[in-house]
Figure 1: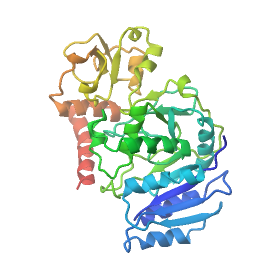
Figure 2: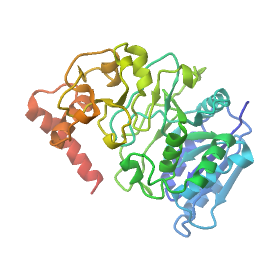
Figure 3: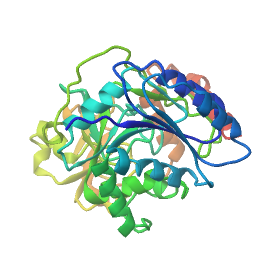
Amino acid sequence: MKYSPVIVVAAFNRAKSLKRLLSSLSKAKKIKNVKLIISIDNNEPYNNDIREIANQYEWPFGEKEVIFQAKRLGLRKHILQCGDLTKEYGSVIILEDDLYVSPYFYDYAIQALSFYDEDEKISGISLYGQPIEDIHDKPFAPLYDDSDVFFLQFPSSWGQAWTEKHWQFFREWLEVNPDISSLPIHKHILSWPESSWKKYFIAYMQATNKFFVFPRFSITTNFNDPGTHNVRLIDFNRQTQLQISECKYRFKNLFDSYCHYDSHFELFPETIKRFSNYLKTYEFEVDLYGTKDLSQFNKPYVITSRPVKSYLSGYARALKPHDMNVILELEGKELFLCRKEDVLPIKNKPLKELSDYKYFYSSIIIGKKAFLYEHLSKYKLFSFLNNY
């Protein structure tokens, strides 16, 4: 099926952000006769300037509609209402106001929506490439294969496309499951504020074993401007390179792909077993970031970066992404295949964080003092400033 999604911009009180996003939309290629909806959550009279910006903006590719909500909805209800527009229009692209889009964002979205139209395991299309995992903000990179996409059991909130079918399945599930506190979701995600729609979508995807399709080369980027959820200083951690030229995307079916990641941004064991005859004989969880809740493991073995009292196989943590060390069986003593009961609690958390920081962020270290001064002190300074 060929889709022509309406573009929905969700705005609230960030005038500079909204102007920036709208300027990028004006530069779009391969788009015509497409409706733009700018939906503004109510904060009257404090965001009347947002309404003025939206009303004055000239959309060059079709009809424009500005919706100023009658009452304050909050982020979760606002995004849910934007998603509900799929019932009227058949499909939507939702963009929060602190994004910037590639000129080819619309072309990518319609190609991806059409390709995955019949796949019941797909719950949405991301336009964002996801360079970091979204739980503890560590770098994330999918395995390379012969396609332009990977699959993640985690939704995108920085540019996403949904069909009516995608959205209807989620809304029906949410109606039956309004309380997700007892579901086996990462405690950090559960701690997100009630204004987060995303944690409900994560719960839905885990419960129904569905996936989002993510592009390897990002079609949107995120400025992470201060707002409802981010009250810190502006940072650039979530900036990604944007696709700036036209191309024919190489899509791959979920079943044929190696690149399946769970809600912790960990490879599914089945992918690792495709490459390792040795590991095919074990039933294991994958915990390379070392952030999963051990009490939720339902398999006897685990591959982890946490300390262990004994192990069956040890792997280095040198190749990147870290999955490659296990797939290519690079021997070492940083990642371990062990029984889940042999995983030890992390008693020296700063040492574990230092080890993680060394692997993820530092390529050359000249002595511990140099590392601490040159890298860790700067990292802590920026963390302090961002939380001041």
